[in-house]
Length: 210
Image 1 (cartoon, one colour):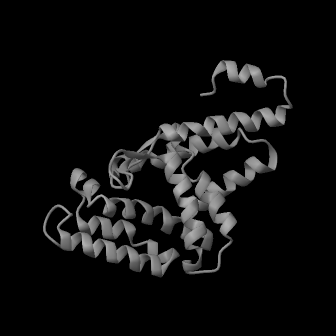
Image 2 (spheres, rainbow, N blue to C red):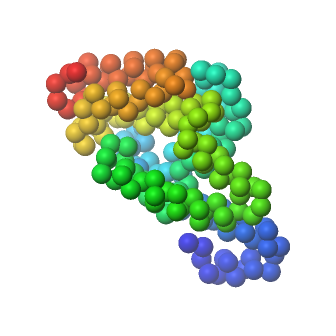
């Protein structure tokens, strides 16, 4: 929500510019959406604004490991907007099957509202990137999904499986969820497997080894 005094101060400017500034101010709310995993030092939970930035940086650094040739700029655009719907819909925990049943409807409504705030072709392009990510049918989207899965795995391993233990997430569920990393990058899936195998060896998953 944009403060009334800020909105009033912008009111005399070019309407196109005002609309774009309203959108970027609205997007700041992503910093208020807390995810389940902690940052690497375990001191606090990560927020969705940080998550989106982190993935964009990962795309720049890890692009050579994509399974297919990709437009890195397109991937970065996708990653910067892929979770913007959480401003309205909130973060859905990847292992919460009950919440996942309502996720698509909530996020589609959020996308309709938020991307409409950006005027003209730019708003349409950002919405198209969000739709592309959701469909996961292009090389860029598959690589973006690989990064979206790898990032929390890296953080969870850094925190010695804290999240897996807290929510009772067994190794078989983690392997099943993260297997799609291979669709975007076999080398990144190999890295993920190394982390998961180590976590199993360390006993960081609840329940017996699978």
